[in-house]
Image (tube, rainbow, N blue to C red; front, side):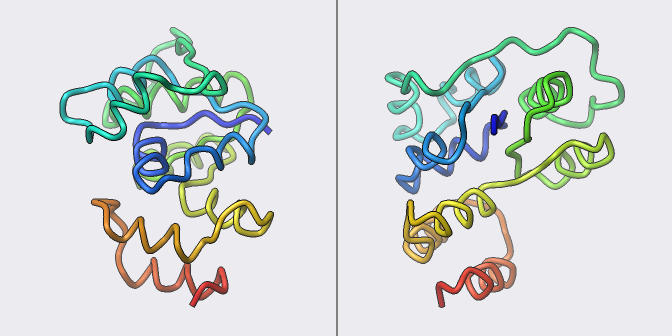
Length: 158
């Protein structure tokens, strides 16, 4: 399966030291050029910028289709471009932002997020989900503690 990711998923998977899991889970991991620029921004955490400076060959950078944003102006450029690529090529969308996920679902796209990827990696024995979530809790990842707790219970990590 091929996935196209927005910025936050790549950002946080790098910050928690689980980036290689994406390569192990998916045949192809694609980001739009807009996501590349966001991940190289001065506002991006230094560990992520450093990782992007020598990003692995398995992380593909694509141009987004030029069909226009079709009502997606309320989303960030990276989210819009990731949705456009997923839609055009039938890829799964790796996205966590609520508005972006909602829009992708309205367009009947397959959607997962960072927690879904970690769950899948845990089920395949590729990572210790409990440790990954513990590291995620130490970042600025925006998800309510209640939902993270529920995720851990459903993943069997607590």
